[in-house]
Length: 482
Image (tube, rainbow, N blue to C red; front, side):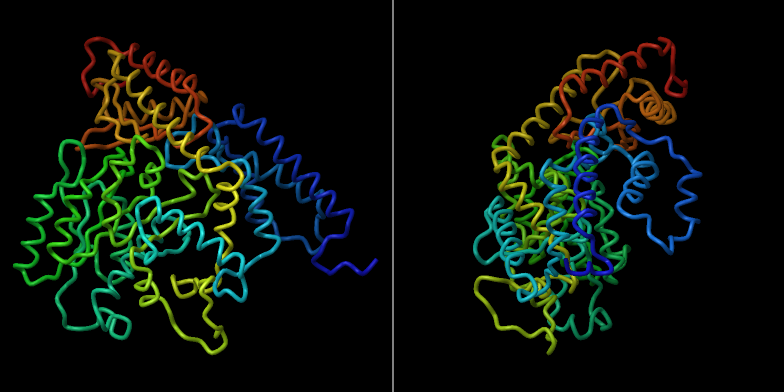
């Protein structure tokens, strides 16, 4: 047998690694419901991971898996737990670990097609399917990213290149008017971060007030645009949200698109949380106007249950991506191919992992209908939770449920009370929920983006919250602790 490369595994070690990995997958899958939501962190172990030098002589396959099982896994959060509901973060789908292993094995660099011909076509197929969900036609395109925040950053970069003919050469180093971005007070912080990174400045981000359902007010948007034009500034982009991260509220996309068309503004949609609810027949109409957007950010690592990382930017006119990101290099010159795309021309990265494989694999393995069913299941659970809360005298909804974010309060409880309840639920292993602040009112939030969650889980959580609410004395004021 030929000598094994210095960083390779021989047949016996490959078999051992495969056996140990399969065992890890199986053991973890079976243990998920019984694992702690948040680990009781062993700080000595973690300090050792930081302080101890890497060995000169390796631990080998068996030793490595022992380290993982004894040190890494016990100090990791169980994001797949069915009552992990604090964030917009679901568990990976069942085929994902295998797709990830294959992607790592063939290690395609998804920058230009010569290095990754099949990967280029797979990513193009995924982007085409995602764009089709929103009615984008053959002129559209996009790229898979690390997440929705990067997708929004890339979208604003593309918008700047489309707005300013000399932006590539001059950037913002000119005497032109200040550019202004508009979004709602309920928007994700990625809009402010993008403005900061691109040199627009957070002072030039307008946070538009919302209505009583936490949707951007179109009249206030129009007022802000008029005021900025009168002050000599240049409005250039509106970022609307089809599914805000706190309440799941859907901005009035159609009316906002009308404003953008009339004012000649780029319309970007931060759909990282909400956009893929378009998979549900019952929500499709609410997202119909998304087709009018110039760009859309969304996250397969949320509602397609792709393991991190897998975000996506869709652009209605893909030529604008190339205008922003294509640079020539003599050492990367290849002939254009009508079948394959060079994704180095569609985003800021050159070296890129094969993210598309894990998205493509899940859609192939389970079929689109399975994801539609999972989305509807989570929508049903959110409404079920809302109904249980409304029926309980000690609890109250903070806003109607639009998608799967359920924001609620214990009646007459203070902000400190709610913080204490969240900690109590974690400590006793009931659930990991998150805080919510809407219109200055503090409460709690369950975001159901977990296909493992069941009605029993929802009942357990609400029953426990009801018990906590009932133990409050009838004379409590909002300042009284629970």
